[in-house]
Structure formats: C-alpha cells, structure tokens
Image 1 (cartoon, rainbow, N blue to C red):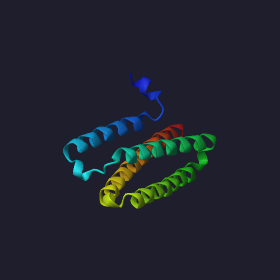
Image 2: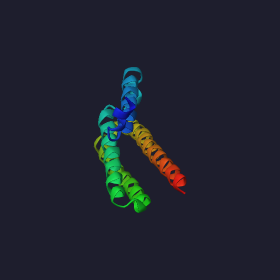
Image 3: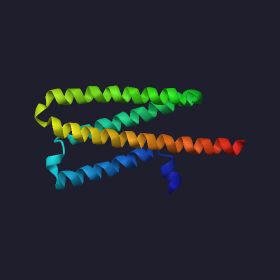
Length: 135
C-alpha cells in the first residue's frame, strides 16, 4: 500500500492539506467568528501556490541539482511576493474583515511554509545519507 502512495506526486501535500481542511471545517462549525468568511479561497490559494512552488523546484533541480538552494530560495521569494499581492487585494477589497483575514492568512501562510520547509529538510536528509553511504 505504501508503494501505491509513493507513486503519487506530492502525496504529502495532499495529506497535509486534507488535515488542514478537516481542521478548518471543525473551526467553521465550532468557532466561526474567528475564521474569515472566505477562508476556503485563502486555503485554495495556498494549496495551489505550494503545489506550484514544489513543481517549479522539482523541475529546475531535475536539470541541475547543484543550484538547488538558488532555486529553492527564489521560489520562496516569489511565493512571498505573490502572497503579499494576494493579501493586499483582499485587504483593500474587504476592509470590514481585515483582522480575521490577516490572522487566518498569516496562520495558513506559516503552516504551508512549515510544510514546505519540512519536506525540503526531509529530502535533504535522505540525500545527505545517500551521499555519506557512497563515501
């Protein structure tokens, strides 16, 4: 069964996103006053942004794995700027719910960023173990 899931690209992102979706749904049912009324759009934005970031990192490092750090940090900077533009649009168009949006946006941003960093650290750890075995 594990081999089946290993063949699904970015399965960890889907699993993490499913956990977040369930958490958001529970939050919507129990404490809706603390969640932004369009939290689903923010969630989808971060899911797609993280997926695109992982695909770009994978694509560019497949060609040349030596420039992994440059590609990774470029993707993180691009992600930051796209997120700032997204947040600015929402803040300017929905001034009534700015506080809820800002808090929810920040939490989701940090959660998806933490997921991405954890995934990269895991990959780097396995590559460094493979490298030390070859020596």
